[in-house]
Image (cartoon, rainbow, N blue to C red; front, side, top):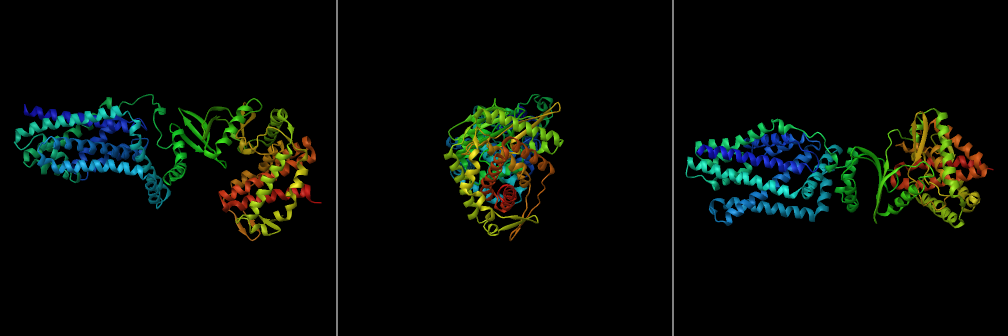
Length: 638
């Protein structure tokens, strides 16, 4: 009969371990589908190691073994093991508190009861303190991680992020099932201890339920191996041996259970949408940038909204450029799409962009809007992803030139007929005056006052890549407001795109026929002349903006600016095509107006480039000067 109590105790504690593995699976299951055999084997091996090693080091092995076999890695595994152990400490504290308050062997359990209750209170208070002091703790975290290289820094910050979310997302699990699992775990354990205590009493009157619990959960058991703790608690040789079997046999059964086909069976149809992304960004660089922002406590409300908005998507790439809005290539439920969104001050601008796209979807080829969401503080819309689509820059440099020239003329004809002609109207003199004041005069003053360009603007000429050009002060009269007002006198206004660069023209090709669609309009140009759109195209094809963007180093010495400028012959040919089109359709005066609008686009660009990366600002200033020299030579020089 006594041996039956022992066998029943082994079965019951093994059942408790299985319930514990199931609870661990629920913690992991917020982020990915856990594999039962991995968790059972990890727990079994971890308990066996803890039998031999002090400080519960088997738990570290458990996290390592499971993490190596999880999609989310060791960081998530370790974080969930910490949460699992946190729940255990609270449970053990409650057990000792009940025993103590019930007056059961108070002298025997007093030390352990005091320790576990205090430990549980400290852990709970620690969680509350971490929440209350989250900002300084985040900054401390990023400060410590920043000591190391980017690879180690990312892993450190990502683990801290995962640990925070493992506790936070405990509320996103099925708490009723977590509670039920916890009750079943400790029902199995306590029942097992009762049976094992009855068996041990048959060996010696010294042993019973309380003695077993104290032996298993004494303070010494935290910093000793289970082997040494059992030896110290059991005393007699036979009792020690049975404690060893009691501790070693259930983990071995877990390992054997992990080998069963039922435990190794995998679900065939895994629905990724049900799992929460730890970090939506696929790129480690994007992850590090996001985590640096998070732990630096910059814009916490914006980051919360970003996390909520992108919780169920995978961010494949970040294509965000110069605007306040972010543009991401995302995947959700196997569907690729582009997501553009903004919080705060840029919300109204993106909302107007969305309204423009919807209002003109029948007028010319535009990106297809899949869905959108607008609130008082944010705006977001998703655009269709087309696998055959490429940017016009790539298309122009991967197709025969005549085909690219034909597509450019097709684009120009489409926007002229479908957009400008339908909304043609006279220019508003007040809008033009504000445009000249804000976009020309104010930006010129910013350039002249800028510390980054002040030295360069002292010279009458610049030597750019070994070629001499007039500097801005020598061409200053070209930007006189009255002079420009006279040039723009013939401008007609319309519902323009506002940012018709090569980057915002997407090219497609089916059955050998090239086509296109347009993305990212820019509303709020003050003076809505269609010549602004043509000027934007010139900023690409004439000014070579895309090539300047690919340049990452510049040398400045007195009035010399040197950098690698790998402009292609394709752009030269497309510029001539566009210039010929403008002259044929609008004559010399209209063409001159378009080129002057291109110069204003450069003036609008330069203050932004100075703010973003002053080190590279001379590159874009050189681009502006080269373009301005062309316009001066063609139209201003007497």
